Length: 191
Image 1 (tube, rainbow, N blue to C red):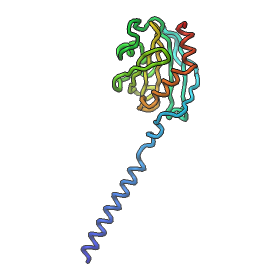
Image 2: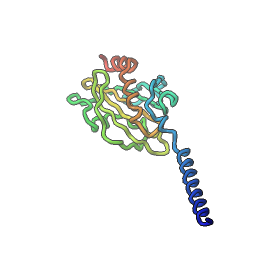
Image 3: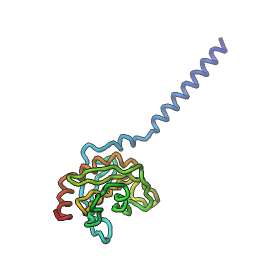
Image 4: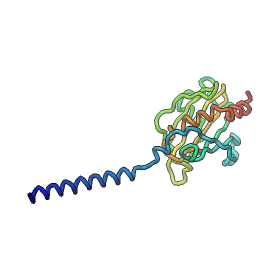
């Protein structure tokens, strides 16, 4: 009887330890997955252009707060007049990288997979996600998007506070397809 009580006590102790460890593990799991879900209604606010003047001039800057986008997103837009490949547009990752404003996102970027074809209104282009590293990085990941009308390109750089840029891509593309950006693009590239 004593032996069976000892075994039962040991089994109960082990099961209790496993249950406690499991409860501790579950409680320590990050809640970031919920915060990283694509936002239902992102709110984009125009902010001042934060960069010094360069050969491409000033662009447009927008911000979507963590409360509205699940993480803070900074979006920078610029037109690059006459700089796109007139024959093929932004048809491959090489052209996207040539057009991209990577310096807005940080110095140490690495592509997360291949880019993909996108459309912004009547314009075609590409989008590609990047991981951002470095102590001075303004975010943890970035999304580079470029699309063109003939030889003129619009380049968008989204800098994100989390490491899942693919989660925010639909919201960025929806904003780029919205009236605010399309009116600016039409005026800027002279349509």
